[in-house]
Length: 431
Ligand SMILES: [Ca+2]
Image (cartoon, rainbow, N blue to C red; front, side, top):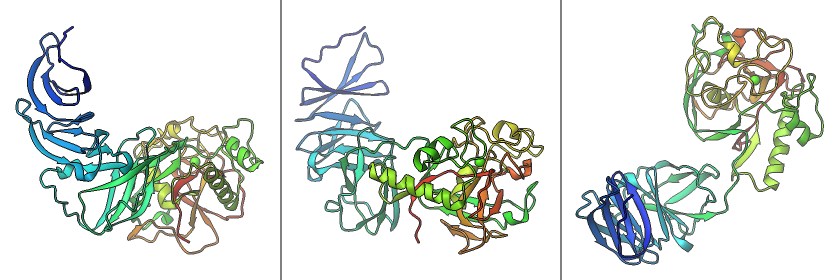
């Protein structure tokens, strides 16, 4: 044990590597070598005033100085801290934290100020020029913080297009440049349960011509961009959930409340999503612009593939010997459904994407994919059938029908015991 007499009350403390950054009182930042607790060495000091808390990266110390704003000190040489600049114009600074590429400052009535570390706010203080386009900001969840647009504070050049609370992710359309932007702190949204957040991205939908077991309607492949993140059900919707919301259970295979609901038409599945949206909206649990709905075929396959390009998300498994670990299908299903979540999940934590029950998606069916490229595709304008994804355990469920590209068609008014669905919590589809 070591004892180092600082000669005053410690206001805040940060450690980075072998260096401790100690705020003594509100007037002095001391940099200490703490490699040997029995022999703490003073490396350097920096005089400050009114500082309440600090955050440190390898290069900079950010000092929150209350009404005096944020002070930035270069600490790359601990023996010689160098004052870089103060940011009193940006607003008060009650507390400061560094998260990923962002410096977050609690700005009192100014809200939460977010600075981009990658722009190295010094130099220059002048706003960096950022190309026109979309900027996505994200950082780990912080309890009790919800991001809200505060348009009166945003520079006029900013226009928001969407925001997704609960994930601490904000997307802004930029038409100009700015060095920082401001977001207000508010009440936290509860995290959705049994939903998995899917980041936006690009993938190839459908199967190549030489994929073992494919059907001709799985191509030509489409390079799809999913432009906005969404939540998707970790499991198929269960009978317990369906009964609680809809007051009935149409399923043929019963006995365990965690069996997937089946024997639902596409319309009933859509009605469930609408009812869930209404319930969650009434409870104040819906992120702005988001609704519960069926996934689009592209969203479903993107989530199913989970960044993989093989036949299945765990590999090609050309002999179909590993499928038994991931899916209830004709080979092991016993002609019935099974409680959700008993098999291994895919790389993004989703269960029963192959097998158990087929899953309704939003899109109309067609006997081919369109090929080419697409952004947030929603399928053909109309057909007699809707798309089913992922294979099933009851009938028409041989191993070849349990691949990421598997797609089948079902009449939307048909209720089959091999068909269920899972929900997404996603941006509302345009009409
Ligand atoms: Ca399934």
